[in-house]
Image (cartoon, rainbow, N blue to C red):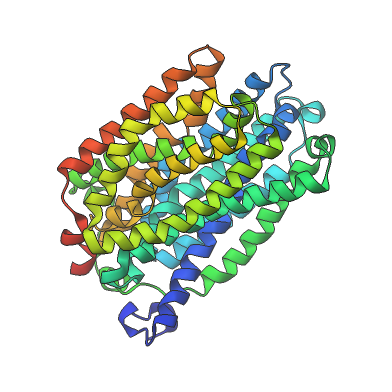
Amino acid sequence: MSEATMPVEDFATMRGRIASIFGGSIGNLIEWYDFYVYNFFALYFAKSFFPHSDPTVQLLDTFAIYAVGFLVRPVGGWLLGVYADRAGRKTALLVSVLMMCVGSLIVAMTPTYATIGIGAPLVLLVARLLQGLSLGGEYGTSATYLSEVAISRWRGFYSSFQYVTLIGGQVLGGATLLVMQLAFTPAQLEAWGWRLPFLIGAACALFGVYLRANLVETDQYVRASADKRRGSLARLLKHPKQILLVFGLTMGGTTAFYTYTTYMPTFLVNTVHLTRDQATQISFITLVLYALMQPLAGAISDRIGRRPVLMWFGVLGTLGTVPILNALAATHSYGTALLLILVALVIITGYTSINAVVKAELFPAAVRALGVGLPYAMAVSIFGGTAPMLALWFKSHGMAAAFYWYVSALIFGSALVYGFMGDTKKTSLIDRD
C-alpha cells in the first residue's frame, strides 16, 4: 500500500497523526490569510478601485465585491465537494490552494481605476470569484479530512484546528497590517503598499501546494472509493434532513463570526471612531486569544457532547448580541472595545470550535465532503459574506441598530436547530464508515 493511501489506523504513533493534522490544516491557514487580507487592507485600497468621495460608500462598494466572492462559494462547495468525494480529499485540497494562489496574484497585479477605469473593479471581481470558488470547496474538504484523520475520542479537539488555522489566517493578515503600518506611511499604503500582502499570500500558497502534495489519504475515503455513485448530487439528496441541519446550524454562527471578525476592524474605525492602528491592534489581540479557545472547546465537546457546546453559543448569542454591539457603538474606549469583542468571541467559540466535526459526523463517507461543503457554503454566502455589506448599508441609512437585531435573530434560528437536533458525538457516521 502506498503512503498516499495509507489507512489512518496504520499510523504507528501520535506524532504521525499530528503531522497529518498539521499538513491538512496549514494549507487552510494560508488560504484564509489570502482571503482575509482583502478585508484588512480594504481601508487602504477602496478608493483605488471605487473613486467616491464618501468613505462609507467606498467601503460599501469594496465589500460588495467581497460579498460576491461569497455568493459563488456554493458553486465551489459543489464542484470541489464532488471532486473530493470522487478523486480524494488530498487531491481536492491541492486544487483548492492552487486556485487561491492564482486569485491572490491577480489582486496584487490589478491596475487601479485611474489606470484602466471600470476594468479595475471588474478584474478585482474576477479574482474574488476565483478565491470564492476556492474557499467554497476548502471548508467541506478540510473539515472532512480533519474529522476522518482524527481518532474518535479526540475528534472534536483535532477538528477544531480547522478554525484555529482559519482564525490564524486572520491573525496573520492582521499581523501583516500591523507591520506594514509601522514600516510605511498611510499614503504609501494607499498608493502601492496594499499590494504586498497579496504577493506574500500567493507565495505562501505555493508552500501550501507542497504540503498538501505530501498528505496521506484517509482510510474512510479509501473504503468509500469502491462506491461508483460517490460524490453525486443525487446520492446527497437522499439525506435531506442532514442538508437542512447543516444550513440551519450554520446561519447564525457564520453571521456572528463575520460580524465580530471580518467586519470588526471597519466597525471600530467607522462607528467607534478609533484609529486604524487601534482597530488593527484590537483585532489582532482578540483573534489570537480566540484561536487559542478553539481546541479547549473542542476537547470539552469530546467529554460532554457537541450539543451542549452549540447551545452555549445559541443561547448566549441570542441574548447577548444586541447589548454587546450597542455597547461597542456607544464607547470610544480602546480597552472597553477590546473586552466587549473578546466576550463576544468567547460566546461564538461554542459554534466555531466544533461546527466542522458536527457536520462531518452527519454524512456517510461517499458524500461527506459534498454534504458538508455545499449547504455550508450556501448558508455562508447568504448570511456570512453579506454581513459586512449589510452592516454598512444599515449604517448608511441611519439604521445601524437594525443590523444588531438581524444578527441576533439568525442566532436564535440556529439555536432552535441545536435544541431539536441530536448529539452527533453519539450518532457519528464517521465511526461507521
